[in-house]
Amino acid sequence: MSTSSFLESLKTNSRHVLRYESNQLKEKAKACVPLSELLALAKSKCNSSDSKVLSDALLIELLDWFKNKFFTWFNAAHCNSCNKSMQNMGHVVPSSEDVRYGAHRVESYKCESCGGTERFPRYNDPEKLLETKKGRCGEWANTFTLICRSLKFDARYVLDWTDHVWTEVYSERLQRWLHCDSCEAACDKPLLYDAGWGKKLTYVIAFSKDQVQDVTWRYTVDHKQVLKRRNLVPETWLLSQTNILTRQLQSSLNDSQKELITLRLVRELAEFLLPAKVKEGEIQGRISGDLNWRQTRGEVGFSSSNAKPVVWLPTDAEISNGEFEIAYSASLDQYIRRSDRNSKTDKWSNGTFQAESVFRKSEYDWNMAYLARIEGSSRGLISWKFDLSSTNLAILLVSVSCPGSTYEDGQIQWKICSEDQCQILPNGCVDFEVDLSGSKWCVLSAEMSRGKGSSAWQHAQIARQSTKECDSFPLALRVLFGSMD
Image (cartoon, rainbow, N blue to C red; front, side, top):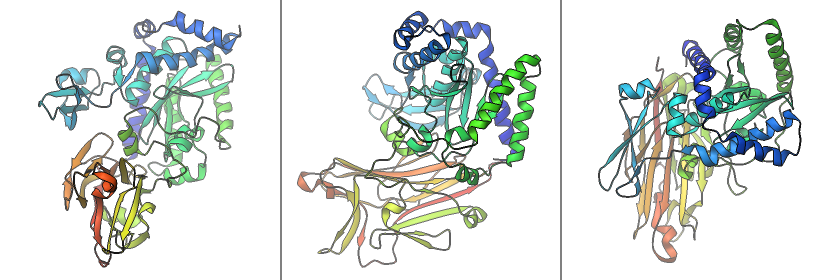
């Protein structure tokens, strides 16, 4: 991403939040909220007549109502005729009606049983979303921020450059901004993404009618590591541009209004000086969205039995050549990074993004080695991730080799996913090309399931090969990438 495209993103989001200030739109949003009911619940729980305490209590009730009664998470289209989830077929060209409501991306779905199709426009118009009441994190944060503004909360829309969005609401009682994630019904848990989901945050920017503010430091525990990942634009440039946009937004404010905002900013910047400590409720994985989708994104959190996810990032040599390639040998239990001087990484788990109920089996009697699911497990899941989010580059093409051996009715489902799409891959494919052009990351995954009897776990095997094969790396992920400008 160049400075020009980064700036355009700042400007676009800065303009977008001004839509929340339409009185007509606020009235429409407020009419959707059972305000009397929520106020009664807030009063019964906070046990205080202080308006500031009541305001914070109302915010908690609003989050709960929005998640559990008002908005719906969209995983995939559902076929009403066959009563089955439909297959994502990628994107289609938006209609003029889609574009009218900000849906420049439209997902296409097809029923594998009856052939029926459905479209899912990714609307960005908050007024339209008050009607559809469904979507993913973008639609959720967009609508929730509008509703907060309709109830006179001082709210701002927060964009995470590693693909998430949420809301912040200013608490007069605490004299600080509160993190509010409507997808999770989470309030004041800013380290949820870093400590709980395992996200490698880079830029987190908050947008309001008065301000564009870099708030990354509220959401991270290791500021030095975050700074190393922030290489899309110069730090001085980012500060300058957010200040310029803020001054433009405040141009019509009087001196007392500007002074109030400045005092808030001073307190906020002081808050950022020292990394926050993780507190209860922040060490948990994501709960919104389909489990497979969350696993693909690596946001289910860490269990004590699993290693921390490994994300393959491009080296300087790979950036120079525009190519990344790793391959794995079950025989050697080793990865080779062909795109970076054939460097080696020992042990299968040291290269995986996620592994659930998977182990490496070495059969000494048959001299064979492979990855399989743990005995007694109904399924095993393993994935590998390559990520360009910290660069100004994007994926051009992906090539994969997915070696899998099945016996009886054992099953292996290979899949490769990016931000916006997933594609099922044929088991056993070699150098199979996938068009993920424009994506910033990709995750190759395999799910092992089924099988018969007590040996069911052995009926789905990945990268099976002779232990005497010392020069064959059958499982491979190759990514070509470059600038999309």
